[in-house]
Length: 289
Image 1 (cartoon, rainbow, N blue to C red):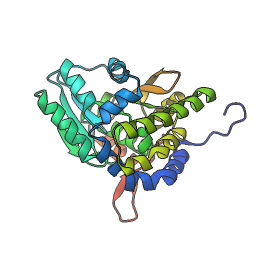
Image 2: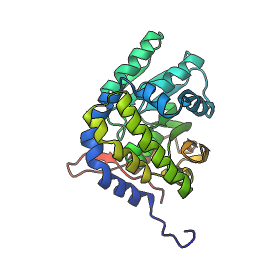
Image 3: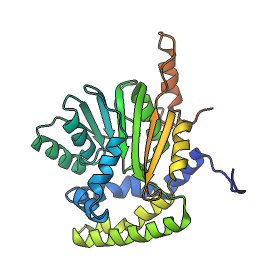
């Protein structure tokens, strides 16, 4: 607690975010990304004033990637990260998951044109269809504001090998209030301009204010670092661009110190899932005790 401000637990804030945006997440975003997939990268290039590739390269520069590793790109979109990494490490095993068939169709076509093989899965990233301790690297970029991000981070940690790294990049809420207000004004201008320039559908037009509100209710760079620590990542570090408007985070899954009988893996699965009313399992809000 600082300056008398009340600290809200991350699990509580995540519940508030879900209550606020659940309808958009479940009923509207699929249509939005089905429309924007065809011009997603071009629109971001325009909105960033030509800095989009530089932003991506700065994010890539934070990663420690070794040849032959197995990597998962969560919310992979148009596969920009996987393609960039494969250019540097052609023997990297790249897997992509995204809920948007349209975005992955664009991404798979881009990879095929370059003779690259990216294994694509269409599915819900809140429950990753991959085994425990499977990936050396997991990445997630420019999608966290549209997710129950604690749940997703818990799933990412589950699928990482002990000692594996999670790399995160997204637009964040600037800690400075003046910068924050200016940021929202600029984003509103960009959303209106790109919607006209690329002739966005009515669904995309209808979600313009949502994109501002989702960012307003998201996390600052320091807050997101604390969230990763609460989920259980170690050696968490971050760097920001443009006075906190964009943040890069890195966290490591703790090294496995369990006994060889597998009890630790079972505990991990139990910790990261809680019962649903229908008797199944859903990702839980995984805060350390």
